[in-house]
Length: 452
Image 1 (cartoon, one colour):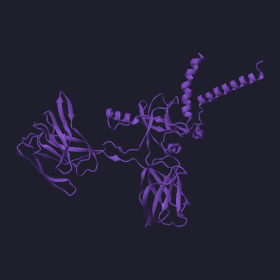
Image 2 (cartoon, helix red, strand yellow):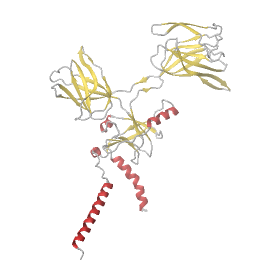
Image 3 (cartoon, one colour):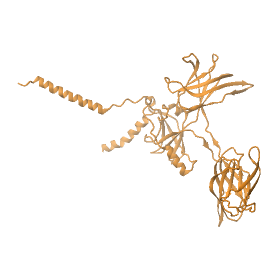
Image 4 (spheres, one colour):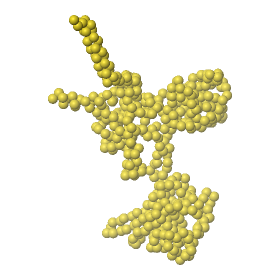
């Protein structure tokens, strides 16, 4: 019975050890109880607790205290759902009796406005303009500044069933066309009070001109309107860390300003806050430790501030050469600064996301800050790609929100673990010492008792 009790205690002891290797934890509040996969947006408090530049001392544990598969993903622009529609100008191009599916004998003469929009259009084919019941539909999207998710077509209502196919093409100059979809079905069927309607055309891109080319000679209903549903790309909001610096001198006697950033933030931009009207050329450098050499972080730029008439004008934030998580930063000015002048440094970043799988029982907690434990590699990027191919490209893991933080091992987790002793080496040395002691004892016994 005691053996079974010890076996039951082994998993709990291992889980406790995994949790106790970290300094702090945050309970995670799940928006859906059975989503399977979740994403956590990292907060400033979490970044300040992480110790490693790789963020490997950031993980998720379940109720038993064991870690679950997790990975950190960079901040990405998100696409909002189609919140508004725009009606597109469209023009019927009569095709006549040609083989529409294969013919390229369409000649289009368009008069355009300075912005590229079509003012008037004339079209003809080698077969003339005999037929007017099966036109090519030319759509003018030149005034749009956002990508088109899809087109919503509306045609004249009638009792005649509609079952047509079109080829979707795109162009930037009305001369060269590329095929976006070889066969787009448009359906409107009625039977016994039931209706089947397919009037949407997927585009998912930004194009100046589109056209729907019929693939059959069957008469098509008269088109009434075309609406484009737009996809607005919204960049994730920037967050800033504002730092106060201290004046220092380099080895060659030049004044510089040094700053310290607490936390492993993914810094991408830098900005200056000058105390008054000023203009100077600045160079930003960074390093990870106080003993490391300074490395360039951003190209030299002119930072300025001009206040006049109650309006303040200042230089724009500058992009860094690469994302960096360094702790120490330094500003160098090309010209000498007046006494008492001390700029403030603003470092911009976009919060990353940690995605994890709900393995084991809830509740789950995010743990951070350790010199002893590191997160295991998990193939979550490949998993998310596979899930999006099955559930749609806009699918995302459910959200999980960090709750109030609490201490785990605290500062002890930030101390390196004592070196592990090699018990095999100690055993070998023990055997050698025991053998040597045996030989010495045998030799002494011979010396004490000589043969007669």
